[in-house]
Structures are given as structure tokens and as C-alpha cells.
Image (tube, rainbow, N blue to C red; front, side, top):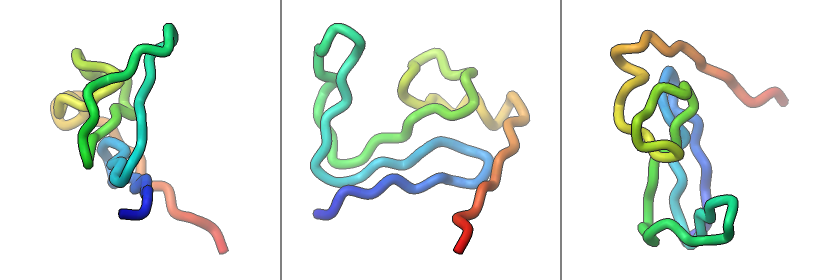
Length: 66
């Protein structure tokens, strides 16, 4: 599977493929085929999303420019 990062409207980054997530000490988070990374800063499970953006009113819908 190709690695992909998708920016969800008003929500997290969806990361899929064969990738690693490492903390500042180089320790790897459990490997999964898909994860959602927090963009709003409200998650209690950072760097992973816990859905807090919904209650927090986070709004962001960036689009790639051509």
C-alpha cells in the first residue's frame, strides 16, 4: 500500500500505508495500517485523535493549490 496523508475537513490527518510514528526519544508507537493524527491540539491521546475536535469547534479545510 502506498503511504498517504489525507487532511480531513475540520478534523485529523488520516495516515495510511507502511509508516512509523516515533516519539521524541525514538520509541515507536504501535504499528497500524491507518491512524488519525490530531490537528486541533485538543486530543487527550496526542498525537492521536480522540474526536475532541468535534466538541471543540475546530475548523480547517485547506486545499492543495495547483
